[in-house]
Length: 477
Image (cartoon, rainbow, N blue to C red; front, side, top):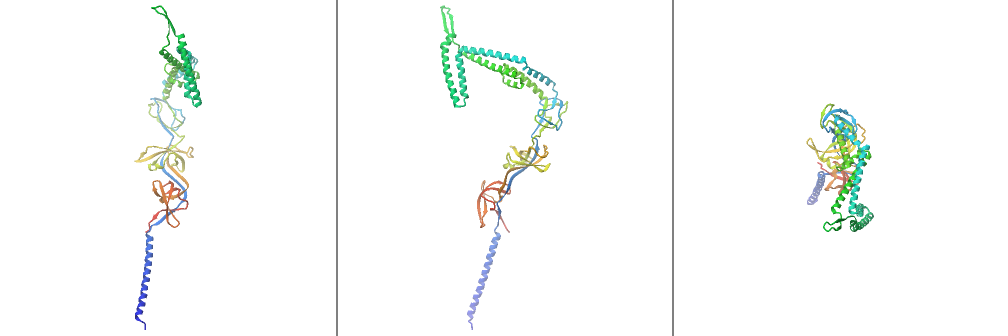
């Protein structure tokens, strides 16, 4: 017969084992559930591979095709319209007469002034200036002789040589030339001193000795009376004026000998009372008459097209604009961009244009000017940009056409590219990314970036193709 106590102990042990097994199973289930719950609440890592591709940063604006030049023309004087020589849409050349006022009085004055000017080149006119030049030469010779007499020919000669030597020193370029010129200065100075000594001891007693009888003693008086400094200075001034007059007379003679009316403009620097001043008077009278006649005519200032005008023969006009011309040889584009795009905008940026008239065709150009003041349109401040167009577009372009302009701020071909979400800014202008390691860990890696738009960034250094970078995490529910 079995012991009941032993039987009960066996039962208790088995029951304990069952409880432990149940507890172990429960703990295992709890641990698995806890891990699953933890996994469910942790955000999932989002990544992207570094790839190669093209990146372009651009901004757009809209505007119009404009002529390279446009001008409103008006007469420079009032009067009655005599004739209109063009029609709207006509192509004209620079210098063409577009319209003319009644100008009989101006034409008469011009013909008279032109005849007077041409008379300068006739034999009689040439003879007049030959006489003027001969007179100027005589005056110069007389003034030179007077000065040489007062200071002696030797002193004048060495004064002239010394002045020339000093001018040579000032004009010398090389050290050798300067040294040679300085030696000439020393030589001229020594010779001048010798000439001045001879002047005092020999020249003055010979040429400036005065003899007279004393009224009281009736003795013969002999005394050297040299020229005064004032006498010498006056003689020098007279010689300089004579030299300038001779130069002027020679210039006037050369102008009339040339036979070229356009060369007469060189007379405008003439001083009053000289031979050249007479030519100046005739030239100014001619120019005044020519300008008066020109003011009665409307002249094309450049090659272009007359787009509109408002005048008819017999109409009384003032200096207000009456005609509009444009130059269509080189079109340009004026367009407007948002001020937020100014940072990437600069002269020389490539531009791509699309015109409303040719939506399937693109034209290339570049930014040529960015105006320094914003323009407010409908309450919005905009940047005013000017751009060039292809020299020879394959389509017909008209001034005023509407155009969409895309300005290319930068392009990168076959570059390393990552999403901008992967960038972590460490400091202004300094960036890094989290690179996913083989074991799933993240490594903060500094990178150098290039171009960047709203979606992607160009990587210049720090990564290679195929690297996996973190772009953030995604919460799961």
